[in-house]
Length: 67
Image (cartoon, rainbow, N blue to C red; front, side, top):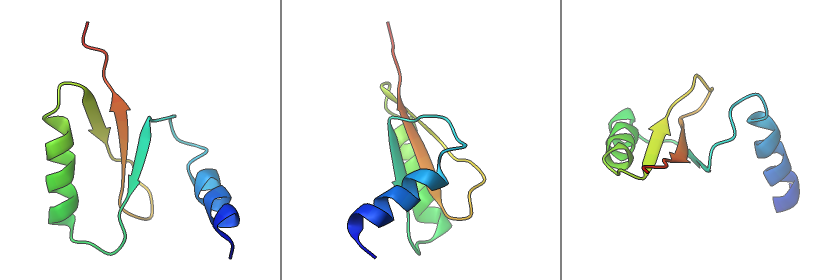
């Protein structure tokens, strides 16, 4: 499968979800690692991370406007 086809398939998978600034997709890693990264992102005053019920481990990252 070509990279463009793979990218298109990945993008279609997230069509039903909000439009985050970044999507972090993890392969076969432990839940503890994902939680650590999510907590680390959440400590930033400029980022917000959230998880949705997707078949794989994914974080949605959004920029936070702290005016």
